[in-house]
Image (cartoon, rainbow over all chains, first blue to last red; front, side, top):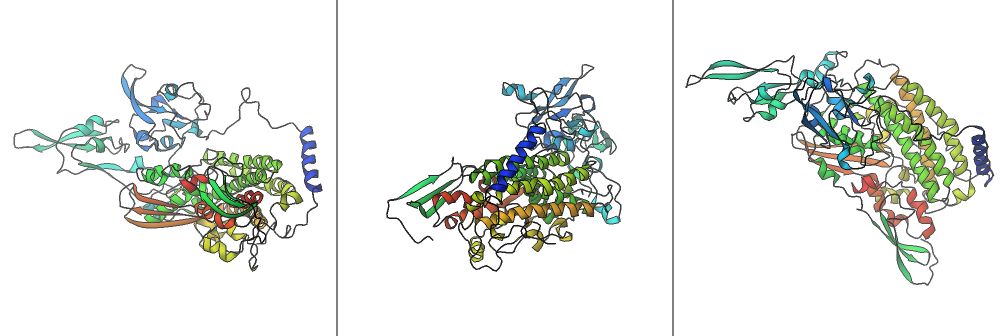
Length: 245
Length: 377
């Protein structure tokens, strides 16, 4: 593969003084008088951006589980869960984003197990005060949300690739599940209370010396989204996430 | 060294941190004897953000968008080198499709970074039209970044074990249109203003010859080194990702010239690199056609990286960038050391400007393409 330009422009300068650059710039001047300029009249017309543009985060309220994966995935900790009333009036937990701190990395949309968090094409975020930059869950909704704005996490398992299976993309929220170390469990039921999808059921496994029931969590792998709320809530560190690779 | 010395009072002149020639915040204190520089002292640190320390409080996935912010115009290569050091530690082979996608994104990043440099050289040497036209061409490549990764500058595209997403529909068509237009219309038009213009070339020709031996001893890497005759490029000599399967030429000037290369040689090397990047993108797309679109582009990786020390290096647009990772087996790094090419290049600026006139300092320092974000980190 030869050089493309260095042979044409050898070390010694063989240009034409200032005639060529003057001709080049004059040519461009004439051309731009004929062709319309590319200027976008900004406030009146806006630049088109593709749908996969990473603007501020958006939220599809009804899909959200309130699991908090986005809170833990956020590199700048700009997301927090707040309690808001849903359409039926029940209080539910939904993410609230401090857009002033957001770095538009798109991790919340990427890691969301139900594609409730999305990226949006909204890039005009200027406000008069910092308080206005905090977007509550209802304000996060974006009008023109479509499928392209949902970022789908498609990871392949290394064990699958070793077997030659290349058509089964998966994600951590489909494979990783919490497992219980039974010796440590004290039957406090905190894990079943914090589970956002009610995947944990307390099952009686025996009786203790005082005749009370010993209950251990039983995790429903179908419902679980691997949000780690139970792992964090467990006072005795009896639960931990088992990663499938 | 210039022989004649004027018998005037010597004085220290501070160029920077706010000076037309300093790209970013840094100071070059020069000791001037009349107009001739006899000594110089670079001062950096205005942009220190504690980047390496901040990484120790973040999980590995969260460092990727931070690595984008090391350098605004080479964001893809910096997040790439971080992903590479994590993959090195985990001993993971990236899927083939992801390797080619990374190569394409890397080369788009290299072209737009070099165009940013060309714009800066234009203003440094008093050619404002080069600045405007180079930035105009750069917009086309930034638009490609939006299509591929979703953002213009902070791409956040590579992931540990692959890339964020596969390329969108019609990306190959758009990218090849852009590259072909750039090769045939865009860059030759800018070169008519730069390499064909005798006042512009005259500012660089014959300014400060640096020999290959000196440059290698100072640790200068990248195009500044290749223009002076050192034939070394990580992409070719230690191929990473899919670079081993791509046929391209590393531009080197003055290979056997004992005198070394002047500022103009270092200028030409970068222009040729842009053409070669276009060729790499074209070949990568040809190779990608043989890989089905459904092929995996990302593998699932464990959160914790096994304890140990690991190193990865890639060819940044500015030189050789290295990340050194010390892991203690948890999900956060124990230490992450960045070897920035510009930190080393700017350390040798004392020797680079020795004996030249003050008016030539912008021509010399522009050729190492300063980026202070990665230098101070």
